[in-house]
Length: 314
Image (tube, rainbow, N blue to C red; front, side, top):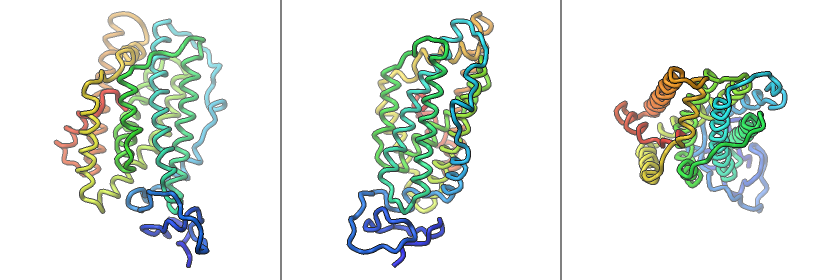
């Protein structure tokens, strides 16, 4: 018998493990090996927007060597350049986590849901590109990378160890990358040089797709699984408890965001930069609450859960 029609409308709820790597819509001869795919339930991985997002992602791929003018002239005060380098170092670390999570998940998904595999594969490619451009910007003026805090790495490690697809999507895409949309917009707005402005704008466009899939998947699953919100809440609380003794956001990163937004080293400018970073944190909180409400959380619970989100931002 046919597996199912090739298009998204041909999905079945629970494809047989025996279908393995067979193309959706193919006639499957019996007797082949069962695939090693434990994520084989449509409700656990699917979002109706996945085919559209994949097509958009494929069309929006960009070449770091061509999309960015690495020779654009600019001169920055030393303290501002050091701030940019520190922020770029922090971004690379977070983007590496954002690559590993979808890469680990997609290998577990039944190929019957191929659009999700394709989308996550492009998502991993996006993060690889972000790692490249943020590293290139950090080293553009011949300096060294900034610092990496133990607390920051511990925070990211909690993302790598979440085995549940929906919970991992929630923690990474909805909360973490959702907050990063605000951070990238902040960096684009306050960028002291054209290269930083360009790469943060390009990365933000990619990250918006990642967040859109995570939100769409969780919204869909929440409609068929009323218990999901309780598990989402428990995941936030569990991660918060695990990170209680960590220092949160690297102080070097916070200070660098202030200096980057200030653009110069004097008390008045630093004061403006500090206010801008506080406004950024408030914007991140508002965005998290808005997405949580969209997923069905009451406003007061959304505010409580947003406040529990890791201080490392991702």
